[in-house]
Structure formats: C-alpha cells, structure tokens
Image (cartoon, rainbow, N blue to C red; front, side, top):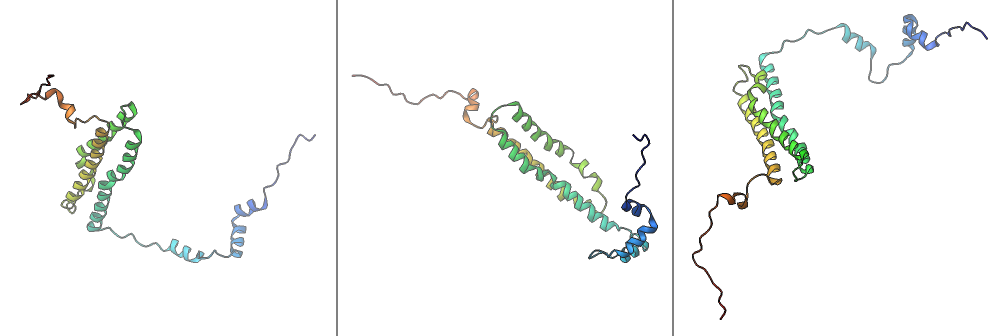
Length: 183
C-alpha cells in the first residue's frame, strides 16, 4: 500500500475558468445569446449618466402614493379576518375569544395612532391632500371593527334581543282578565 497519495489535478474546465487569458480566448468563440449584446453592456457600464435630482413635486407625489398604500393596508386584511372569524365558530372557546380580542385590538390601536402612521408623509406640499388619505385609513379600520362587532353578535355576546334586558322590564298589568268557569 502506498502511504503517500498524489493530489489529482483539477479538471480542465476549472483551469479554464481560473485563468483569465484562456477565459478571454474561449469567450471569443462563444456567440452571444439572442437579445444580449456584450458590446452594448460594456458601453452602458462605462458611460454612466448623471443622477437627476428629484423635484419636490415628484417627491410629494411619491409620498402621496405611499400614504395611499398605508391607508388601504387595513382593507387587505379584512377578507382574511372574515374567513378566520367564520371558521372559528360561534361557541365561546379560548381560541375564538382570543381571535375576537385581536380583531378589536389591532384597529383600535391603528385608530389611536393615525397621525403617527402618516407623519412621515407630511410635507407642506402634501398637507391638504392627506386628509382624504387619513379618512380612508379611519374608514378601513372602522370596517375591521364592524367585522369584530359582527363576530361578537354571532357569538351571542351583544345584548340585542328583548330577553337580554328582562331584569330592567316591569311586569305588565293586564287590563282585563278572563276566568274560565265550569258550569
């Protein structure tokens, strides 16, 4: 048995990739794929165009678009929450109670932090335009709260029927009484 093992030389393709002289020779024989031109990409890399300054109007427009995205974000979670509330059932279990708690907690927190959510978008150019965006944000969160009220009602936790208020009702005094007589 031979105690010294010889290290095999790397394959030819690995040598070709590490040697830049051979690599440039091989690249000359390969045709560019359709739609790719190595000369045009080399020109783009060498000729850099100066970066154009963004105007305040363009920045205000961009901030307004981002503000609309923030305002409509609560509406994107309403269908998911509706399906989750439907699937959780109407019985009083810890799972459904925690889901209803989270359904109320998230929109209430968002409503309380409306101004902080849009503070990064406020500039002198967007001050008047953000009112509609904030109103939409509040409306979307109110829709999420309405979903929570629907779920609490379907669980039977809202006092909406007359039998829920029997303790405060007075007993009726009949105007007439009928007595059945045998005779």
